[in-house]
Structures are given as structure tokens and as C-alpha cells.
Length: 188
Image 1 (cartoon, helix red, strand yellow):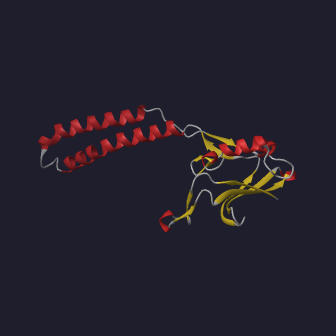
Image 2 (cartoon, rainbow, N blue to C red):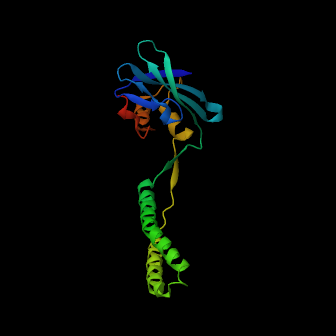
Image 3 (cartoon, rainbow, N blue to C red):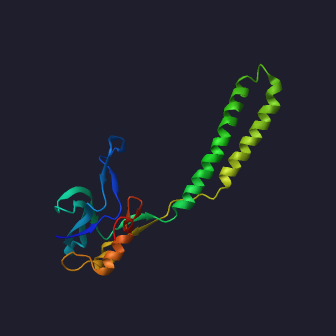
């Protein structure tokens, strides 16, 4: 097992539990550091990385952020998120515009026997609803595309035999996404 620490350059705020409404923990920059322990299992082509927050003055672990098992499978990374988000937003917008028309049409249909003069309005709504449905159907469906990154064979080169990061490994680690942003936003 090996260990290295990187002082925080930015305050770290994380949920205190799995439920954010239960509160948050604040680890101020300058007082805490990110630390990792590595447990290599080279015969199994596996690394276990334990990411923690450490108090700088005492060297004590304050919080375990995560335990990651690095294998040859790697970790899924969505590579077309923005295209997928636009597609789902377009579908949602068209559907939201269509729903009130469907409801209005259903109401008019339920009273058609009493008010046959509503037939032309029903026909108009039907045409408009069909137009919206055609627009939705004509959107090019976007399926999330996933690639697997940080496979054991890809990252083992970034660790020395004792589990410490090489200089290239430090640069690689800074690009790993942590809380939605590169780790380099938290450490130097």
C-alpha cells in the first residue's frame, strides 16, 4: 500500500450522506488534502485506489471519498452527452406542447354527441397533434454512446512499483473527473 497527498487549492464540499438534504461537509483548502492509497494486485491485473480527505496538520484521514477497483473493464464514460441532452430536450419540448392539445381533444371528443359542431375543432386539433408527433418521429434518435476509460492496462504505466504516481501519472490523475470537474480544479 502506498500513499501520497495533494493539498486542496479549493474548498471541497460534499454531501454528508447519500442524501444531500441531510447536510454537507466542508473541507477548507489549506487545511485538508486529497490523499490516495493504492493496493496493487498485479497478478489479477487490478488496482484498488482509496481516495480520502486528509487533515494536513495531523495526517489523519477525515473522510473516505471512494474506493475504486481498477480492472481491465475500466469505467464507462458517455461521449455524446450534449447531443443526447439536446435530443431529449427537443422531445420533451414537443411533447409538452402536444399534451394540452391531446387533453383538449379528449374533452371535445367526450362531448361530441352533445355538440357535433365541435367536429371541425377536433379535426384541427387532430391534425396539429399529428404534426407534433411527426416532428418527434422525425428527430434523429440519439442513443448514449459509452466508451470505457481508465482500464488497468492503460493506467498501470502511471504508477511506480511501490504504487506512487509517476510525474505522468500525476498529470493523468489531474484530468480524472471528480465531482463533475477535473481533479486539477482541487489540487496543484
